Image 1 (tube, rainbow, N blue to C red):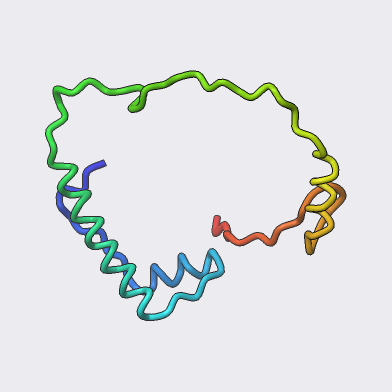
Image 2 (cartoon, rainbow, N blue to C red):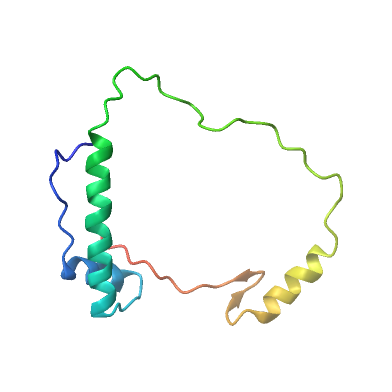
Length: 107
């Protein structure tokens, strides 16, 4: 998706809205730093979009793939470790740790 060298606008309001959705409260300095970094990132993306890749074959993988050899040993004390983790959890339901939902869905 090309943006034809258009800069994407990231406003203080948009940053605060996104931060609020994930329960963060960034300082003014953090917001300014984020906007500065975003502008630099946008410039880099514009440069990348200018690269002619029309005669390049798509890759299915960028790294050399070697099948991993798994260890032959078997994990011991899994139930004991699970019990220790559950004992340290502040909230749990049966055998599961209960977490607070941090991302809101506006839909």
